[in-house]
Length: 156
Image 1 (cartoon, rainbow, N blue to C red):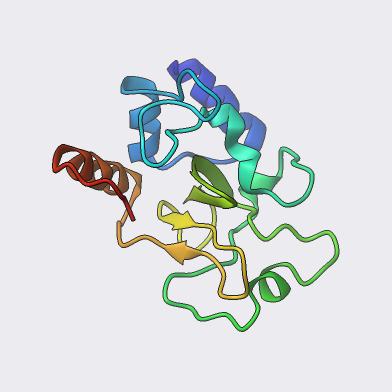
Image 2: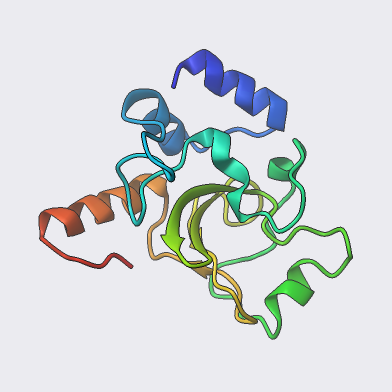
């Protein structure tokens, strides 16, 4: 993806992409062929244009600039009720979809809020999203590459 296209995306959505993700999409890859994207964990990496896959409501350009309400190590009694108490609240605001894991699960990159830069996995149910152990996107991606090179069949 060109630097100019990234700048247009950031201005349109009023966000600044984490530096490691920004560097990846401008120098390594940005989605790819197929329904779900290019080389990456699970079904591959989405194009940045598919950022809204995790949203439960209608996407709008302000959604990425709103803080993601989840925090690492926080326990939720009822994730959706706590993260989106209002009728029009979006629980996955502030996140960009990275990859589809199958069924209803996705990997997301937090762009806004206390967990900015972290990768989180959606999880239907009351417990809410799971943060990966990785400190940032690039660590998450490199861990996947290491798993592939080691011949592992599952990545978590």
